[in-house]
Image (tube, rainbow, N blue to C red):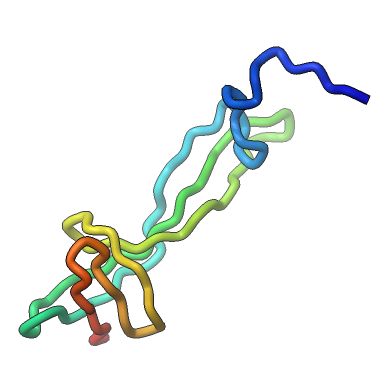
Length: 96
């Protein structure tokens, strides 16, 4: 059985996200860290949420979680208390 589509697959929204979804970013947590030479750095954990309307009301689809510094530098989590700034490879240790 073949399913006909009105648009090529490359133009269709991902299956996990409705076509009319608004994507927002929600702050989950904020951690105080220390970088090189005891430089204070705030690391923010955030996640993306797609919000769409259906016949039964608002739908919220929780998406990816990420980390960044308070000045928008992308960060990767190494373990619970250790993070790394991706661009500079600076290690950040959680202090709280």
